[in-house]
Amino acid sequence: MRDERLEVSVSFDPTRGYFTTGTALRTPVVALSLGGLRRRVEAALLPDEPVVQLRLDVLAEYERNRRRRSPLAQPPPQRQ
Image (cartoon, rainbow, N blue to C red):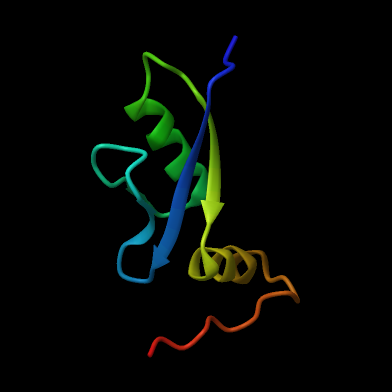
């Protein structure tokens, strides 16, 4: 049974797609979808098989809502 939980911070870049941030993994993981990102993170940690929980930042949350065509999709904050 998988009882180890791993929180992975995720961001979004239009040129790369979703990608992991922070130090939870040794190397950044990039994927075009959140499901693909979760599968790649699980594959990178295969012997341990932790429960992966994705923590989306503002840009990743916006992109997820945009792809779902949600009325909650607000434009991302402007970078200064």
